[in-house]
Image (cartoon, rainbow, N blue to C red):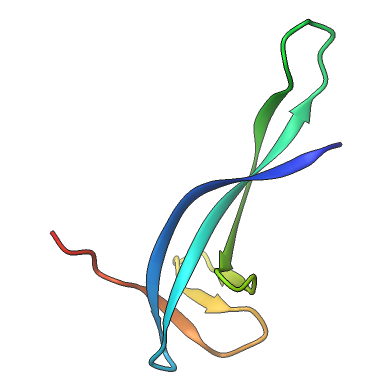
Amino acid sequence: MEKKLHLLESFHARGSDGKDYMVHCYEHLALVETLSATPDQWEPTGQIEYKLADGHLVHVDQNDQMTIADSDIRLERSKSAA
């Protein structure tokens, strides 16, 4: 099955280490095999993935708490200006 990522959103976050991070949220899409003449059709798989701008994975738990993979650094979404 062929897959690709679709960017849903990007946002700034502050780490528990005091640094600022850019987080990208992606949705996994899968290619739908059809016999029709329509061009490639991609559909969501229901899987969401968070990554830092540098490619490191970000884990998001059931309470929407974000942690950089393989570290103890917690992230908090920065408050946007109104």
